[in-house]
Length: 386
Length: 161
Ligand SMILES: Cc1ncc(COP(=O)(O)O)c(C=O)c1O
Image 1 (cartoon, chains in turn brown, red):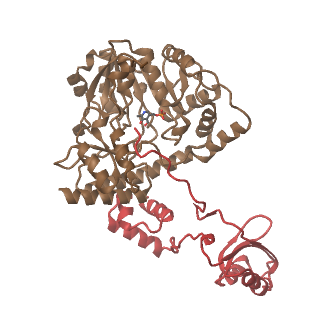
Image 2 (cartoon, rainbow over the protein chains, first blue to last red):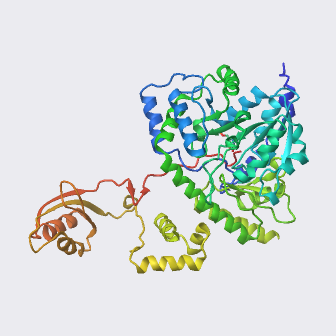
Image 3 (cartoon, chains in turn green, red):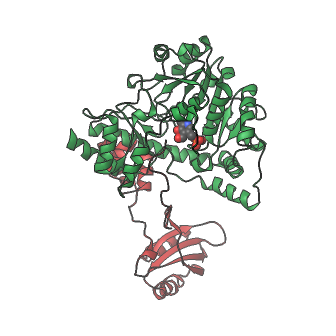
């Protein structure tokens, strides 16, 4: 007896970082700049609230869409921080990570044969998510010349006017790019003109630097009714392992996502919901402190790459930067050799889709001591090989 | 503004090189040096010290937190008493505090005997001091914002999306 794998599963290739794991295993002095999650522990107040909720035996399911109190807190938070107005009863769903919310959206809105345009380089889960839902992926590459922002020219060149849905993620994983309101306006116009829906992954919204405040595309005229916004607690509140995120959108769209969620997940982790409530209630200071730490590291890393002589665009969001590999290397080669020879783990940009080739994703969600050492090793590697 | 940032970084780790501080703040290295010099000259930065976990050393180090009550008179104010106490090298910190007592004093020595002798022979006899309560430190968990536990290992996977 053998399981017949579904076509959907078979068409998705294995993850591009698998191979690097195995190389990293061979050394015990690896410093990793390949990590896509905060190095900070969850703010203590949030952990304490989770512990207290466990002590009190609050371990049952919650409402499908999440604890009402938490949805209210989310509603207040997104209004306060990002000028987003969503009703806690009808327009918010709490999920097991933003990951679940993204998957729910693909399954709720994508039919077989539908085309989903994805601004790339991008987080690696979108493409498989579309394929699992039976849709067709249309990559829309962004370029370093545009600071990895999505432009109408890129959308047109890719033929996205024919697409049904557009996925975007700013601040971006893996490039660290952000989009200002002025950058978003022409994209919004394109989307309205060609009647696309938008799935906007804003999980890095709190992590912007240099005086830039995150702007959600859903706040632009005519966009709210055609946009689902994803956010969560993994990045800004350093809660990755607690698995908690949420989606915001018009009532009927959220109801459709909830229909899947109620059968496949029932409700998001209860303990995590208690932690999240406290995180929104009292942990803003912790978030600000983490943001200022990331910002210092960001400037440090950008300066070091310039000193090393590697081109790097001025990333202004998330906790990544995206330098170019020196001539004579592909990104894959550079990543593999710098790992073997110097024990520094980085992710080749190709993994993140179109537009990522020739670049490396560098995560600075790592302490300064390690960053300093890792960059010294990269410097030695570049000096030796160029 | 840059003063504040440099100060924060020095408070985080006084051994950051000026080059690294420059990279983290987008200042020139010479600017960072100038800011530090100013901070020192203005007496904002009074010194740089290591944060030590004495439990990790063979050699004993005794520390005490001492509460002091004082009686003031027309000639003697808090500052006068403080000045007199602060001169002793055994006193590592001295603060006037609100609440049930007046001064909070930290004292260090190589043995309990040395510390208690210091308090009974040098501190208690000061005429304005009416009462001393000495608490010996048994275990320290956090010093200068640094936790002294074993720390948590980084359990993150070396690659994640
Ligand atoms: C862009 C982006 N979206 C979503 C996620 C997943 O977030 P969560 O932990 O909330 O599922 C990540 C995690 O790396 C991410 O980078």
